Image (cartoon, rainbow, N blue to C red):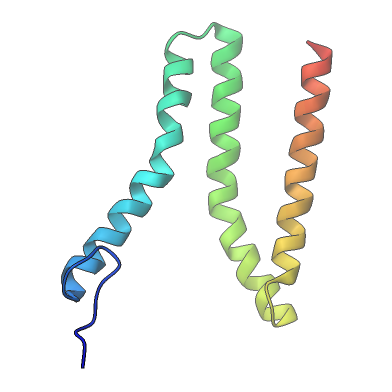
Length: 104
């Protein structure tokens, strides 16, 4: 019988894999913040306000959307409603971005 292999190579080690996966997830989620903070550091007052609004909206969504997703899953028995909601939120964001770009 072949020994089990982990996703990161080598023999299966539960302790190592439980540490590595969250570390990779943290790095992947954190990468975009460098560009945001670099923009904010050299920004005018108006640009800084825009960055603050984007960050606040992201933090608000991070608080509300997981609970809303769970509620929709409990209500419908699946994740289809949550994906439709996220598609609508993304469509609204895209339309807002296009409208703002045309106005400036």
